[in-house]
Length: 582
Image 1 (spheres, rainbow, N blue to C red):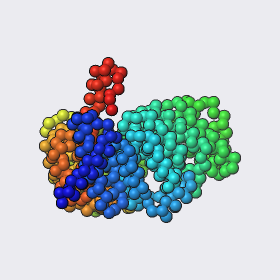
Image 2 (tube, rainbow, N blue to C red):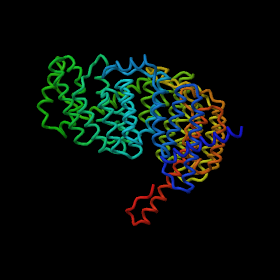
Image 3 (cartoon, helix red, strand yellow):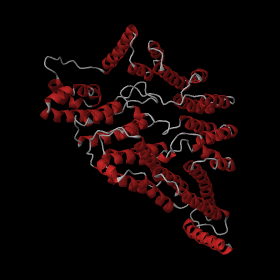
Image 4 (cartoon, rainbow, N blue to C red):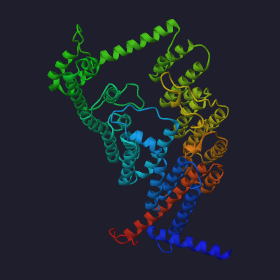
């Protein structure tokens, strides 16, 4: 037995030494030993993860281990990610169907399993994007196996993450790749809208690239690609006044590109489909105001199209932006009045009022509804949205008062984490504890029934409890937001997270832990032993693997910083231009 133990230790040492050569350790230094031990921990975690039966769960486990391993052994990390990406792909018959979809094909609502696969692949790509060439490799593999829509989705997600990480160059590259993959899908457009809220100049550049791609793309009514693209263009060019965060209108270059595209595309339509041109009159008129300001040289072409687009007997009056806005406002107010008068408010009008911030009108409309589940849900929807609006205006007391009325876990999840984030930022010492204890109390007695989607949206679009545990996710997000302000509160919540996870109904076999692992990253940096104790308290193998991998990533970052600091000292000592010894 001792001989077997000796041989196994010897094999481990030889294996570790082979990794040590790749890691270029400092002989005799504690950092090199720490890296070797951490690689061994990650290898052991990978071996344990191999016993997870469900492919998607195993894929997520590999992705999290790869994330921690990146700073220790990038090539091993890439190997893990390649394996994880393949595990997160559908069966071959489904791949064939997806590859056969042409550009412009109407997207179908994803099933729960498809959403899970997308989430896992997005997580893999978020790790892979540290190396653009490698991220490209995985995205191209996905496009090759699943078709152009996969490329569009994956590159758009990379763009969003790159921009949020402050890498504008990578964000531009990924958006362009997403558009080139499939310009009629909408994910890239929504990412551009997010960018526009923080960087108008970059968004304008991306809009011009998007329009250039559309110039060579055929759009059709049958697959709804024409309506999708025009709707997205309108969102990009004419941001909603009440959007949150606010988005300013595009600049001259983007506006000129838009006007040129409208006229060019409708000129082609006029030659072969005069009926379609008449149906496209509103699209044409949307270019009138920007044309006058940014592209007056196109006036003759516009006026000819305007004449051709009129229905028989229709006048040629041209709208202003103010007249269009007034018309929408008048129509909205008319619908409100009629609904209140006839006691038959529609759900869509109530949601429109909520989205516009007309909370008082929304409540008047809801009062007309009969008592029941729908009325209760809409009242909570108003409370949740108004609570966030009051918080954004600095009215913390009003926001908390509305939040305290929430009973459904979905709305508690929407409201309390952002409120707590604002509370911590306010430096109000009593606020974090007050909000945390109140939120936990509400979560413990919360109604966990998923909220019903608005009319017209399939029920399958709302995650079921086996797909999303709203209580567990709320607890983890609360812990992540309170950790910078109070270790004690965060650690209390950590115990709540483990207990909630161990009794959760959510299915980890779909690659979902149900919690936000950020809390383990934040707490491991402050109290590794306590974070590890909590991680080992998870009964589910995937949850335990993800939590431990997150803790190991913190250790890997600390070791990497130690090496960087040591190397910098060597360079400074050598006069600033010498390279450290390997």
